[in-house]
Image (cartoon, rainbow, N blue to C red; front, side, top):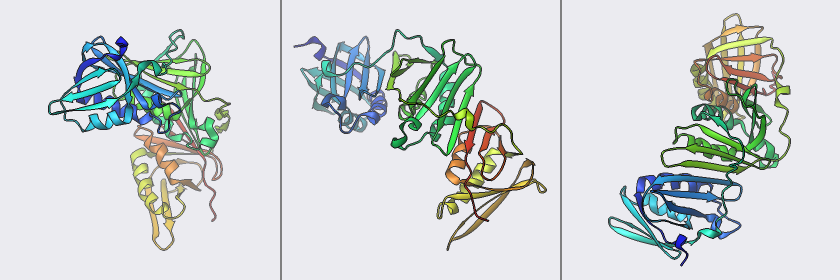
Length: 378
């Protein structure tokens, strides 16, 4: 018997369940090879490694374990996750014999059939590539400020990614779906080696979940085809690996207007709450919210109407410079941008009812959100 198919260990149900719930999300439903529907278990040095990989996106994490026999084996990922999630919060013994694994806990046991570890593809590490170290809190903030604006339309594949640009002038993340553009810029985080890559937003949403569990710097590595993100915690290095998107990302800096004729400063939460209430009506028709700037009254009026249901309007105080303007937005696009910002006040910079509008926080990190208005009839 291959010694790497012998495995015996004890771990906590809560630890195993937490990691499996993260990993099972990315396991393919219709894998090109049966082993890609499995999770690789690797027992070694008082810890258990768990790895999933569909050849495009992979994650490896670790949990503490009392290892009696080192070894590795693969098991059906979703089946294992469903079993473990329903077990009580107690210690679980994991023991293999050949490719059969038995999970034993205080009042029962489960047996399941696996596949040998040798069939499982190796997760890329890019160890020879110089890493860019980014504080996890900063990176998480950048993802929260941009990921929501990535496209979900697979026919525009390059727009389903996040564009990362690191250089001596700073670290920048950008996403666009063709209707809006979100940019997070961190001028204090510089890279001697310029990096320009487009990373699938799907992979970064999983990384965002990992960042919420591990408080550590993120080590970023890229080559022409792959990206890896490493987080070093108490049990070892957790790693996410993904393929980069191919193609030319839009030259988004050219979309930014050079100057603005109007400027509005408003309390963010007040604005967001009004948008979300008005959006209840807007959603019944075309999801459009009208915004009127009133310089004389120094206020913004929001309104929406739905045939056969009614009309809603709210006003809120604002600091306005420039002439009055009647403009309209997609309610979701507007609320998404406001929700992604954490500052007390936000600023809108505008030119006309048909030109791009820029929304940005007045404090905190440098975040820019460009949104295209919707043309409305008088």
